[in-house]
Image (cartoon, rainbow, N blue to C red; front, side, top):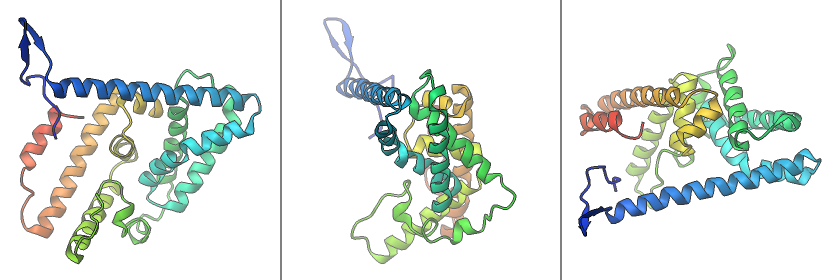
Length: 252
Protein backbone atom coordinates (compact mmCIF):
# COMPACT_ATOMS: atom_id res chain seq x y z
CA UNK A 1 0.00 0.00 0.00
CA UNK A 2 1.49 3.35 -0.96
CA UNK A 3 2.21 5.75 1.86
CA UNK A 4 -0.12 8.76 2.11
CA UNK A 5 1.06 11.93 0.40
CA UNK A 6 1.14 15.37 1.93
CA UNK A 7 -2.06 16.20 0.08
CA UNK A 8 -3.99 13.30 1.64
CA UNK A 9 -7.45 14.12 2.96
CA UNK A 10 -7.60 15.51 6.48
CA UNK A 11 -10.46 15.26 8.94
CA UNK A 12 -11.54 18.55 10.52
CA UNK A 13 -12.50 18.63 14.16
CA UNK A 14 -13.29 21.94 15.79
CA UNK A 15 -11.74 23.79 12.85
CA UNK A 16 -8.33 22.13 13.39
CA UNK A 17 -6.92 19.81 10.75
CA UNK A 18 -6.37 16.32 12.13
CA UNK A 19 -4.15 13.74 10.43
CA UNK A 20 -5.65 10.68 8.80
CA UNK A 21 -5.19 7.37 10.58
CA UNK A 22 -2.52 6.29 8.03
CA UNK A 23 -0.56 9.45 8.84
CA UNK A 24 -0.74 8.66 12.55
CA UNK A 25 0.31 5.06 11.93
CA UNK A 26 3.20 6.21 9.76
CA UNK A 27 4.39 8.63 12.42
CA UNK A 28 4.13 5.92 15.05
CA UNK A 29 6.13 3.54 12.86
CA UNK A 30 8.87 6.13 12.37
CA UNK A 31 8.98 6.81 16.10
CA UNK A 32 9.16 3.09 16.80
CA UNK A 33 12.00 2.66 14.31
CA UNK A 34 13.93 5.53 15.89
CA UNK A 35 13.44 4.00 19.32
CA UNK A 36 14.60 0.60 18.08
CA UNK A 37 17.70 2.09 16.45
CA UNK A 38 18.56 3.97 19.63
CA UNK A 39 18.10 0.84 21.73
CA UNK A 40 20.31 -1.20 19.40
CA UNK A 41 22.93 1.56 19.37
CA UNK A 42 22.91 1.71 23.17
CA UNK A 43 23.46 -2.05 23.36
CA UNK A 44 26.35 -1.81 20.91
CA UNK A 45 27.89 1.07 22.85
CA UNK A 46 27.80 -0.93 26.08
CA UNK A 47 29.33 -3.97 24.38
CA UNK A 48 32.06 -1.83 22.80
CA UNK A 49 32.95 -0.38 26.21
CA UNK A 50 33.19 -3.87 27.69
CA UNK A 51 35.25 -5.12 24.75
CA UNK A 52 37.62 -2.17 25.08
CA UNK A 53 38.19 -3.28 28.67
CA UNK A 54 39.27 -6.72 27.49
CA UNK A 55 35.96 -8.59 27.57
CA UNK A 56 36.27 -11.02 24.65
CA UNK A 57 32.73 -12.31 25.17
CA UNK A 58 31.41 -8.79 24.58
CA UNK A 59 33.32 -8.54 21.31
CA UNK A 60 31.93 -11.93 20.26
CA UNK A 61 28.44 -10.58 20.89
CA UNK A 62 29.20 -7.63 18.59
CA UNK A 63 30.29 -10.07 15.91
CA UNK A 64 27.14 -12.15 16.31
CA UNK A 65 24.91 -9.06 16.22
CA UNK A 66 26.35 -7.68 12.98
CA UNK A 67 27.96 -10.47 10.96
CA UNK A 68 24.78 -11.31 9.02
CA UNK A 69 24.22 -7.75 7.81
CA UNK A 70 27.92 -7.25 7.15
CA UNK A 71 27.93 -10.42 5.05
CA UNK A 72 24.79 -9.31 3.19
CA UNK A 73 26.48 -6.06 2.18
CA UNK A 74 29.71 -7.79 1.17
CA UNK A 75 28.09 -10.57 -0.87
CA UNK A 76 25.73 -8.07 -2.47
CA UNK A 77 28.73 -6.10 -3.69
CA UNK A 78 31.30 -8.75 -4.61
CA UNK A 79 28.75 -11.42 -5.68
CA UNK A 80 30.83 -14.29 -4.32
CA UNK A 81 30.13 -15.92 -0.97
CA UNK A 82 33.69 -17.06 -0.27
CA UNK A 83 35.11 -13.62 -1.05
CA UNK A 84 32.38 -12.03 1.08
CA UNK A 85 33.26 -14.23 4.05
CA UNK A 86 36.92 -13.27 3.76
CA UNK A 87 35.98 -9.60 3.58
CA UNK A 88 33.79 -9.84 6.69
CA UNK A 89 36.51 -11.70 8.59
CA UNK A 90 39.05 -9.06 7.62
CA UNK A 91 36.62 -6.31 8.62
CA UNK A 92 36.08 -7.74 12.10
CA UNK A 93 39.83 -8.26 12.48
CA UNK A 94 40.41 -4.58 11.69
CA UNK A 95 37.65 -3.61 14.10
CA UNK A 96 39.25 -5.69 16.85
CA UNK A 97 42.68 -4.16 16.27
CA UNK A 98 41.29 -0.62 16.20
CA UNK A 99 38.67 -0.95 18.92
CA UNK A 100 40.67 1.07 21.45
CA UNK A 101 40.63 4.03 19.06
CA UNK A 102 36.86 3.91 18.52
CA UNK A 103 35.42 6.95 20.32
CA UNK A 104 31.75 6.33 19.63
CA UNK A 105 31.19 9.51 17.61
CA UNK A 106 29.17 7.34 15.21
CA UNK A 107 27.25 4.12 15.71
CA UNK A 108 29.34 0.96 15.86
CA UNK A 109 27.55 -0.66 12.94
CA UNK A 110 28.14 2.32 10.62
CA UNK A 111 31.84 2.16 11.46
CA UNK A 112 31.86 -1.59 10.72
CA UNK A 113 29.89 -1.22 7.49
CA UNK A 114 32.23 1.50 6.28
CA UNK A 115 35.12 -0.94 6.67
CA UNK A 116 33.15 -3.70 4.91
CA UNK A 117 32.18 -1.35 2.08
CA UNK A 118 35.74 -0.11 1.55
CA UNK A 119 37.13 -3.66 1.57
CA UNK A 120 34.45 -4.75 -0.91
CA UNK A 121 35.21 -1.83 -3.23
CA UNK A 122 38.93 -2.57 -3.05
CA UNK A 123 38.20 -6.18 -3.91
CA UNK A 124 36.08 -5.25 -6.93
CA UNK A 125 38.85 -3.01 -8.24
CA UNK A 126 41.46 -5.76 -8.33
CA UNK A 127 42.71 -6.35 -11.90
CA UNK A 128 42.73 -10.11 -11.38
CA UNK A 129 39.07 -10.23 -10.43
CA UNK A 130 37.25 -12.80 -12.58
CA UNK A 131 33.99 -11.07 -13.49
CA UNK A 132 32.76 -14.01 -15.57
CA UNK A 133 32.56 -16.19 -12.48
CA UNK A 134 29.95 -13.91 -10.97
CA UNK A 135 27.38 -15.40 -13.31
CA UNK A 136 28.69 -18.97 -13.37
CA UNK A 137 28.53 -19.45 -9.61
CA UNK A 138 25.34 -21.44 -8.94
CA UNK A 139 25.30 -20.31 -5.32
CA UNK A 140 24.89 -16.71 -6.40
CA UNK A 141 23.68 -16.29 -9.95
CA UNK A 142 21.33 -19.27 -10.32
CA UNK A 143 19.69 -19.47 -6.90
CA UNK A 144 16.94 -16.87 -6.83
CA UNK A 145 15.84 -17.95 -3.36
CA UNK A 146 19.06 -16.47 -1.96
CA UNK A 147 18.57 -13.13 -3.69
CA UNK A 148 16.85 -10.55 -1.49
CA UNK A 149 15.11 -8.54 -4.23
CA UNK A 150 13.04 -11.50 -5.46
CA UNK A 151 10.15 -12.75 -3.34
CA UNK A 152 9.87 -16.44 -2.60
CA UNK A 153 6.92 -18.10 -4.37
CA UNK A 154 5.94 -21.16 -2.35
CA UNK A 155 4.30 -23.91 -4.36
CA UNK A 156 4.99 -22.15 -7.65
CA UNK A 157 4.68 -24.06 -10.89
CA UNK A 158 7.84 -24.73 -12.95
CA UNK A 159 7.25 -21.74 -15.24
CA UNK A 160 6.97 -19.43 -12.23
CA UNK A 161 10.22 -20.81 -10.85
CA UNK A 162 12.00 -20.31 -14.18
CA UNK A 163 10.62 -16.79 -14.52
CA UNK A 164 11.64 -15.93 -10.96
CA UNK A 165 15.18 -17.15 -11.56
CA UNK A 166 15.36 -15.20 -14.82
CA UNK A 167 14.34 -12.05 -12.96
CA UNK A 168 16.93 -12.73 -10.25
CA UNK A 169 19.66 -13.31 -12.82
CA UNK A 170 18.71 -10.10 -14.64
CA UNK A 171 18.87 -8.08 -11.42
CA UNK A 172 22.20 -9.64 -10.50
CA UNK A 173 23.63 -8.85 -13.92
CA UNK A 174 22.40 -5.27 -13.68
CA UNK A 175 23.88 -4.91 -10.19
CA UNK A 176 27.20 -6.37 -11.30
CA UNK A 177 27.41 -3.75 -14.06
CA UNK A 178 27.03 -0.86 -11.61
CA UNK A 179 30.08 1.09 -10.42
CA UNK A 180 31.15 0.02 -6.91
CA UNK A 181 29.73 3.06 -5.10
CA UNK A 182 26.38 2.75 -6.87
CA UNK A 183 26.17 -0.94 -6.06
CA UNK A 184 26.96 -0.19 -2.42
CA UNK A 185 24.11 2.30 -1.97
CA UNK A 186 21.62 -0.05 -3.62
CA UNK A 187 22.57 -2.87 -1.27
CA UNK A 188 22.53 -0.64 1.81
CA UNK A 189 19.20 0.98 0.99
CA UNK A 190 17.17 -1.71 -0.77
CA UNK A 191 18.51 -4.82 0.97
CA UNK A 192 19.53 -3.61 4.42
CA UNK A 193 17.04 -0.75 4.73
CA UNK A 194 19.60 1.71 6.04
CA UNK A 195 18.66 5.37 6.37
CA UNK A 196 20.36 8.08 4.30
CA UNK A 197 22.19 9.33 7.39
CA UNK A 198 23.44 5.85 8.25
CA UNK A 199 24.60 5.31 4.67
CA UNK A 200 26.36 8.68 4.62
CA UNK A 201 28.26 7.86 7.80
CA UNK A 202 29.12 4.35 6.63
CA UNK A 203 30.51 5.63 3.32
CA UNK A 204 32.08 8.81 4.66
CA UNK A 205 30.18 11.18 2.37
CA UNK A 206 27.35 13.69 2.69
CA UNK A 207 23.68 12.76 2.72
CA UNK A 208 23.25 14.65 -0.55
CA UNK A 209 25.95 12.54 -2.19
CA UNK A 210 24.20 9.38 -1.02
CA UNK A 211 20.88 10.55 -2.45
CA UNK A 212 22.52 11.45 -5.76
CA UNK A 213 24.29 8.10 -6.02
CA UNK A 214 21.10 6.24 -5.18
CA UNK A 215 19.11 8.18 -7.77
CA UNK A 216 21.60 7.42 -10.54
CA UNK A 217 22.01 3.80 -9.43
CA UNK A 218 18.24 3.27 -9.62
CA UNK A 219 18.15 4.86 -13.05
CA UNK A 220 20.86 2.53 -14.33
CA UNK A 221 19.15 -0.51 -12.84
CA UNK A 222 15.82 0.45 -14.36
CA UNK A 223 17.34 0.93 -17.81
CA UNK A 224 19.16 -2.40 -17.62
CA UNK A 225 16.08 -4.27 -16.48
CA UNK A 226 13.89 -2.57 -19.09
CA UNK A 227 16.32 -3.70 -21.80
CA UNK A 228 16.20 -7.24 -20.47
CA UNK A 229 12.40 -7.18 -20.32
CA UNK A 230 12.23 -5.88 -23.88
CA UNK A 231 14.53 -8.64 -25.12
CA UNK A 232 12.48 -11.37 -23.44
CA UNK A 233 8.95 -10.00 -23.85
CA UNK A 234 9.26 -7.95 -27.04
CA UNK A 235 8.11 -4.69 -25.44
CA UNK A 236 8.89 -2.42 -22.51
CA UNK A 237 7.26 -3.09 -19.14
CA UNK A 238 3.95 -1.36 -18.53
CA UNK A 239 4.07 1.66 -16.29
CA UNK A 240 7.72 2.45 -16.92
CA UNK A 241 6.87 6.13 -17.35
CA UNK A 242 5.00 6.11 -14.07
CA UNK A 243 7.96 4.45 -12.41
CA UNK A 244 10.21 7.22 -13.67
CA UNK A 245 7.93 9.87 -12.19
CA UNK A 246 7.77 8.02 -8.89
CA UNK A 247 11.53 7.64 -8.82
CA UNK A 248 12.06 11.36 -9.34
CA UNK A 249 9.79 12.43 -6.51
CA UNK A 250 9.78 9.39 -4.28
CA UNK A 251 12.13 7.48 -2.05
CA UNK A 252 15.40 8.53 -3.64
